[in-house]
Length: 107
Image (cartoon, rainbow, N blue to C red; front, side):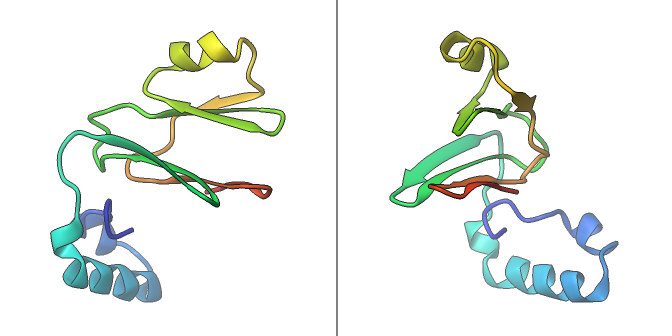
């Protein structure tokens, strides 16, 4: 949330509890906010996280096939390594796709 937090105009329309939390995140971690066109994938010992910029200037596509998760900037790249994925989607702008090893996708 700190890296690709919602815009102020979107925070203003949220329910009070969520609005307060995101206001504090934006105020405390404002300098960590990633602005500009990007898609980021990073892995750690417990899984994989992918997300793109808040206005979706760069694409991020995710897909699943059985117990595997694929992420790329283009669907064609995923279909090169997985011909028939079970599910393919474009995550919302700034929304992370979180994959926990052994637990699947957490959105």
